Length: 199
Image (cartoon, rainbow, N blue to C red; front, side):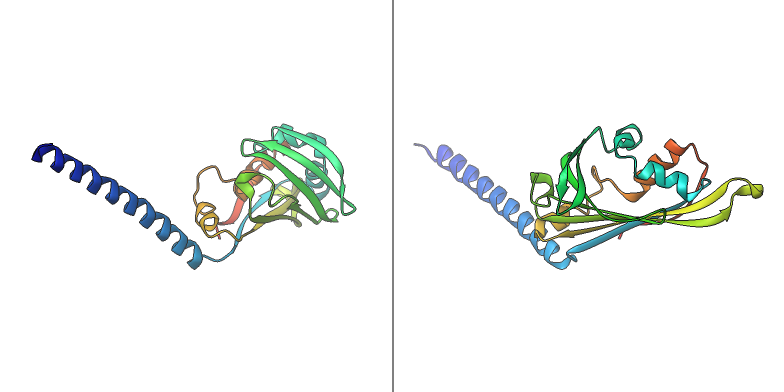
């Protein structure tokens, strides 16, 4: 074996070691960043819709109609109650998730939670809850139809350090503004964005 071949082998080993240390360093950095991030992430958004709270409530509680207006749900299947509370399976671009109805206070407050935080690989180690609040905002424009302020609050608890970093990436995330846009579209209501908070 000549000295050129030895040199090539040494260079290949050096490049391989550099790549390995780079990957390990990146993973270590992501884990460190995850340890610095809070375990609980809260996102919220509000919109004023020119519809009565009762009208909006009917749309929000119509399980069979959800795939027709929610862009993150392609199909919905009712399943037996979990712990005495209604539950259903949602199928969407992100996979399958089991959702449980936790609180119903018509027509003011609706709380659901992800019932299978350890189920699908994309959701392993997460506990998510969505709260929807409706507050009558009085008459609409020019004294027309009533207006309602709709607020969606999503609370997600992530125990996995790497998961905390990944949940902060904007790729494929379903955030409250998307839910509110879908709701305004199905109601055919004019809307005014009130606030949107990523954290």
